Image (spheres, helix red, strand yellow):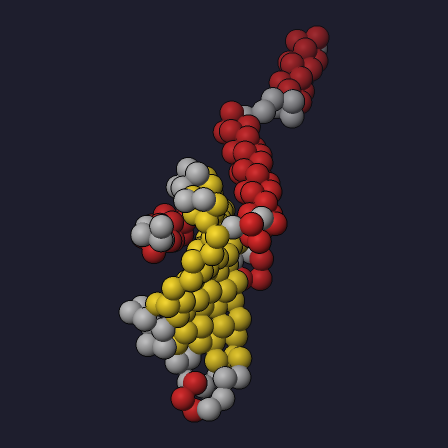
Length: 175
């Protein structure tokens, strides 16, 4: 009888100890999520700094004709010779897109992308808006660390590598 009681006590103690032990994978994931949140907060601060300093920055504006049927333009904001922000606006027959790119030490840290789609092509005479979409891309060391898609939903990380490559290729020659 004493053996049975000891056996049950040992079993209960062993099972309850699992509630107090963190699995290594869970701790690593927690640290990873915490790191991403810290990085995003740092990016948001830098984003705010850049936007607050916009009046002090030198602006270079250029027309862009080769990338869309209706053209577009870019506005680049420089602190001396250092590019801090670039805005690209492209017009098309059925909508327009605007990408705001923020840089720190020559590396992309944030891209805010807006897409507006029209109900009918602009040559029809009306530019009534059909749909709006926004995406936010956060980067750390040239890696996409978070993508907030339409409706402020975090996009599945499995889609990050392709989108990361696409964005980095698009902005490769913005300087």
